Length: 337
Image (cartoon, rainbow, N blue to C red):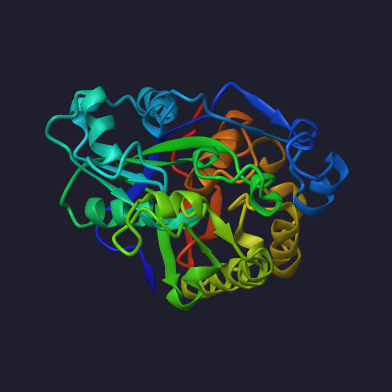
């Protein structure tokens, strides 16, 4: 699915990011599984990741990011019309984490729901919020992207435990006079769903002593196939959207890819021909935070003053589903985080 902007102009007016305090280094991981700092860095580019406390849920990690985004936008909780939370690790199956966040913000009149699209969740979330805002259904939206993957990782599985970390980001989206989102390209290939999945806990395999014993409540990933998919789709999705918009790579001022793996990012950068100085990379400090990946990276770019009013920003994600999504926007605000 690909589309260009119509209706009201919509942009990001506030952004925030947050990660748990605890840092887990590669050296610490080497005490749990057969690995080393060098092995992890060469294959993933990750040096450390953040890990939530036992009593920390997604809403706890997301709330500071949400509050920063609201403050930057000058918007209060009761002024929000829509709250979307993109995650695969909600506080609980229901109620939606978005509803729990709404309650803590005093957003009693806002529509609030969760969205599941794996690591692409944030891109799906901002595309949905854009549609609601551009269509005139609402005026102010909050999109949260975040995951607490440490809760669903098998710490004896080297293929997954070295990759994932915890974190969340949030953006406020509003109608603007100029600039804003120019278009989106989204897609999914369910035939690859079993390459990255959580087998048990749903209606297919309800929780039981057997599913727990079989490690069915942990992430299962075919790393080789996911890598092949990611390196292909990060490039193709971005190229399709740029072509639809009549833009070239030279028009892009900042590229924010999903922070899955440094080799995947470098492959996409080389294939697209984007100069390294235009690429945001923080996978070395956070690991793969799934739906939190792109908003955390974008929040870092804002804090480091790497994005300015009028800049053209390209974001591309991919993840479980298998899903993918790209968005291009003209940055509207001169933000100071």
